[in-house]
Image (tube, rainbow, N blue to C red; front, side, top):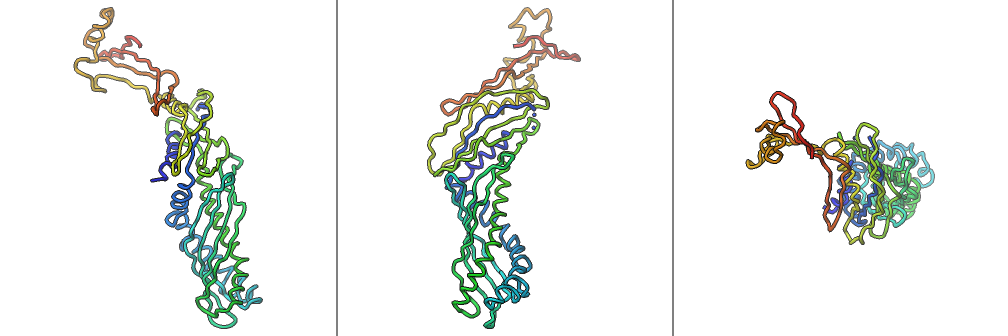
Amino acid sequence: PKMSKFWAFFLLCGLLSPSQGHLGQIPVVSQVDKEMLENDGLVGGLLGGDGLVGGLLGGDGLVGGLLGGNGLGGGLLGGSGGGLLGKQGLLGAVQGLTGLKIVNITLPRITLRFLPGIGLELKLYTQLTIDGGSAAGGLLRAQVEANIVARARLAQDASGALKLVIEDCRTLLGDITIRLGPKLPVLDQALKSVLGGVLPKLLCPVVDTVLGVVNSLLGTVTSVLPLGALGNLQYTLGSLPIIGDKSIQLDLNVIGQVGQIGQLEQVGQVGSIVLPPVASGVSQLGLPPSVLSAVLGLLRGTGTLDTDISAGSVQVAASIPLSTSVLLSLMPELAAAVPPALPLVLQVRSAGVPVVSLRNGRATARLAASVTVLAARPGAPPQPLCTL
């Protein structure tokens, strides 16, 4: 619902987007409300429980495979005693804890906050259930709260595509609750000390994986977008996105390829687009008339706007039949060359570059066209009579 305004821009990218010849670079400006992205966009959809996080970090995903008993968690924190925190490892030698293993991790709660002029901050809160043993005897089960805080910066790679680059990732441990086993303060401190050094190596790669998927989506903004038989359109970034207090502004250029030949069509220079002040919860798209002209130009270049009109193809009023009789009543001088009562065919062909103007909230497209009148003779090719 709210995100429809944001994704409408990318849907437009898909619609505006194979025909050769460059249409030039046309600027397009989009402003997306930050709160809409933070609350209902990436967090609520892509990074929500039913989205990427639910699949990637769920029990059958990365957590189940990488951090589960048979994965990295089982090996690094292994229960056989050979892992880093096993009986023969660091913790067994120093603190007397053995066989620590991550047995459960709750679905993370993600908070996304955009940082003006920088990028975004991603906070991931989760709870880990850890099983193990104690030199004091008996089983040990502890629940650990973990907060992952990562800061990512918006950058462009060598191809000009957008990407998020992690500048800093920290894992902060919260409360440690001993649910089964000896409840000793020294044990709490031992767990917090050792896990504080190990968990960042396990959990920060999760953030890398999440941002990797986001980066693959960001890369589609500047990819070549097909228009079927018409051609291609590609959007390139005019500059890095501008992250403000209330909105994110994308400056894009539109590059079009028309036809299978090298004919060039230039739409000319377009001035900068100025958007009005943004209201809370509202996204805007600045679209110059040249974009619409370019798309209509794609259609004209492939003959999509051309048509043939005959009595059988359109509904014509009985008082205005498409026949030479009507034409002869208007142009009697054709009587010697054209027999009466022959059906007519009107060939409409577009000419020139379409021009689109925007005024008072309305778009008007002007397209020059020629109309050739032909007489359809039985058993013979249509005979051209005149061109308007």
